[in-house]
Length: 85
Image (cartoon, rainbow, N blue to C red; front, side, top):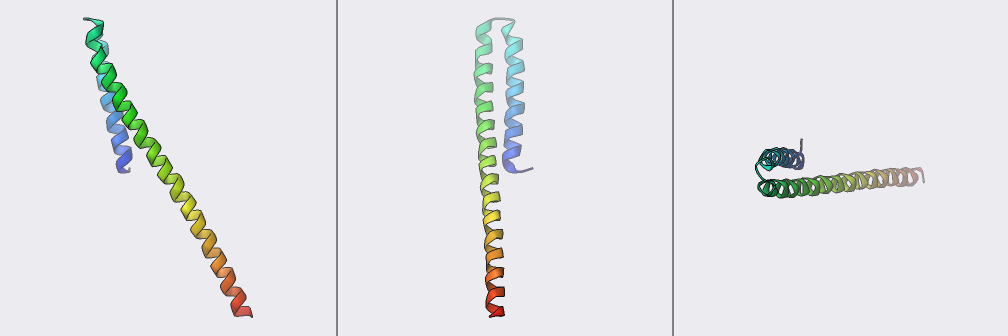
């Protein structure tokens, strides 16, 4: 697992714990649940931003790998043409 995946998992676990706590506190009074709900939303937002950033990096890495493979193929073709001439 990458560092980002660990952070996403930790944020989601924390958000789940906060949501559970908020649900338990809501039985006493609904206002007691507000900090837990807001905190869970913040942690889920952080988790989502890390997840999206990792996806962007993976997409960019795949595009760069494909470009490198295409360049390598062009260089091999060019080298073969020069040696044949």
